[in-house]
Image (cartoon, rainbow, N blue to C red; front, side, top):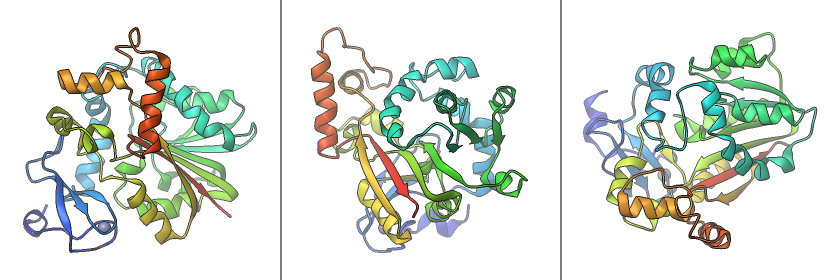
Length: 308
Ligand SMILES: [Zn+2]
């Protein structure tokens, strides 16, 4: 890391504006004291600066990522092994399916970027789709290969392989915010879609009520992560997608429930999902999420990109 990066006010990493750059998050989980998340008034980008080097980042994904995630996941996800990881993510499969189903047909070829233990690919395969995965972490690779999945450690490796081809559907879940150059990444992935193909992505939304509606010091120390280059809002996502001239749609989603939010407020920690389900009615839990989504004051965005 060089000194000019450390001490100057940055140019926006999404739109290059140099005016109106202010610090949005002073503390970055897993980062060094000089790391901050900056906000751009022009395009609404929230971006990490100074930018970690490519070498630091590669080391992190190859060796550290699963440990890092385990240290953050509260108690709802288990990163201790592939089978446990798959089991403890079945609620994610069910939640995501309503966003995915309209785009899916048995027989389609699907690529998942960042397939992890393959818990989503299992669901796609069961639905009758042919799945290929990209996963930079080495932790689950042997496991996936044993299950006869075609897996690559990077898009580059896939494109250089004899199997390189285009897909009907490309998906990624909580990957886009980790990407250093979103423009190149989107161009490269959309190029791998067949004509008429779809890209579906799930992305954290920085309008998350835990940071953009309520003030919760413990959440601020937890949310802003060194693993992310960006925290997107509908406005900054639209900026990127409009620049690229894509046809797309953004859909609001709220992953975390009222119990999770109350536990953050009262105990300052994650892991509260569902805690008060014996007290709150199902309608209340759903209505709370629905109010957040309606205002786009929600923690997650689904992105659909259509290739002509
Ligand atoms: Zn900007």
